[in-house]
Amino acid sequence: MNNALTIVKKTAPVMPVAQFKSLDHAKACAELFAEAGVPAVEVTLRHADAWQMVKICRDLMPNARIGVGTVLTRRQMLRAADEADFVISPGFSRELSMLANKTLTTYIPGIATATELMAAMAEEHRVFKCYPAEAIGGVALLKALSGPFPEAVFCPTGGLTEANYQEYLALPCVHCVGGSWIVPSEEALAKDRAGYLAALKSLYQRPL
Ligand code: 3PG
Image (cartoon, rainbow, N blue to C red; front, side):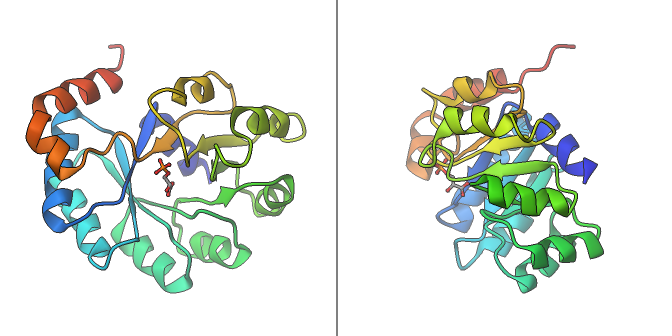
């Protein structure tokens, strides 16, 4: 499961959670992300063409890790194991965890409670999507969970924005956050691509 740790560290500070509206939207964002050096993206399975969108990101972002998100079923896990670099679910299921293990898939399950963390840590997971972070207690919840679960590392997602994500990143248990707010709509991109590119480049700038 250490690959999951590598993914969240490399992805810092923000994993774009992409819910593309169309194949053209996916293409435009993937080109933007590649140019900006975005290290990883979570493409959610919430569109009829989602698997094609995953392929677009793979093709157009050759230097990035491409994740498939909203993985809820065995069938999705098996396909994602073949077509993506890592897999994310909004919640935890032992069945999916075992399947990820069997297929050697880098897997980041979601958790919302101490009970779910216990179940997931019993399957050797250490890296979690905390979802839906803002709705279930946000920074205060993560601080509280870090007491009994000092080894757990989180990528909080759900309700994070430009205005609050830094508060999450300030927690030692948070190595990156996830959010859809940094994925521009097609309309926004058409209006100010240069502005988005500059903002993304500065977000992912790494010290040499
Ligand atoms: C997810 O799937 O992780 C969330 O829907 C993303 O949440 P956000 O849209 O509030 O960033």
